[in-house]
Length: 434
Image (cartoon, rainbow, N blue to C red; front, side):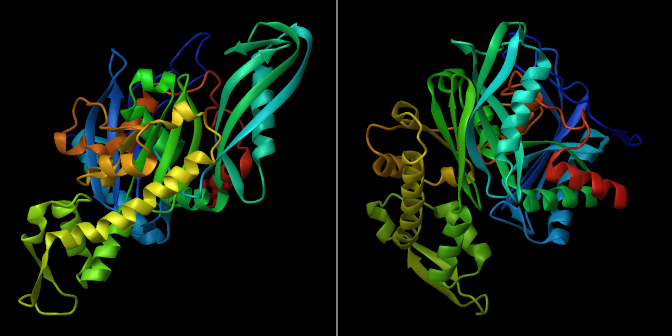
């Protein structure tokens, strides 16, 4: 094998006027999805047709991560290093930086209405950066850090519906901004863990946003839809409309709670509870479930001490937990302020969405008027079928972001200006001291 070559991917730049996509990355780059159940690393490049091609991939069971946040630095470092090493060996490349997902720090969406004085001249890029900076400053509270700042629309004097006001003459510029922030300490821990793995966090992308980029079709993003990423430690949602990210939220429930319920009720090891969920998990009862008996080893007993339970017992343990999850989702959607027509289109993805009957249960809890489908990520050249299921929506969505999808007309590039904000200042300090 040839000697591995260290490579740092070039950063995206501000797209030109009228561009529906951001600027795609050139050369080889890496993405890293750090989840509660697995860590996924993909190394890819963008082909001439604008789509990504995977050159290397690796994934490991996640350790040291709970509810999306790092709780054990050493264990998390080992998982990340192993996943990245597998991808690097396959791609014959050493990464210095990655695009990483955001699932830690209790991320929240905020909407700000900004009024900016222009004074009768043409709007410049500096004005737009000032507007975006004002939205970030308003969001900053003790212990929070802005991650995304997306313009939802501009108004030039009395003229609304403007997507890009650069070059337009006006007295006042009004902007509606969607700012997504997260706990600074959680972001710092994520950055420090990557630094220990000799990786630079080049960009941070919201996990449900990435899942939406991977699973929603263009009409859903335009007409309005909500993607629900049912992960191992959390269930997160991202609402899209008019091609933009409109809202995100995160619930502290996921597939891990289902596994834990099975382990506790059946007094079986967690590894076997996970196997039961994967192989026999369902929320729909069938007549044959009463007669089908499943072997269940007991905690602390010898291997030959195995109990047998009817399959219907598995269903009765799993269903209440998922019902609770969808009830929490329903309440969160109703309190989000999103238009009802947007909330009526739901796309379920993530590993926990693969349980039998999840779609039907979601339909019953969320209402018959709600349209629900199961979302699989788009196919990526170079990835095997085993890495193309709903559990990989987040990682594949990070590739879509790198290809320019979902990026706003005005997008700040990390490192393009002196470090600002608690997280970037902290990362600069880490790089200097360690």
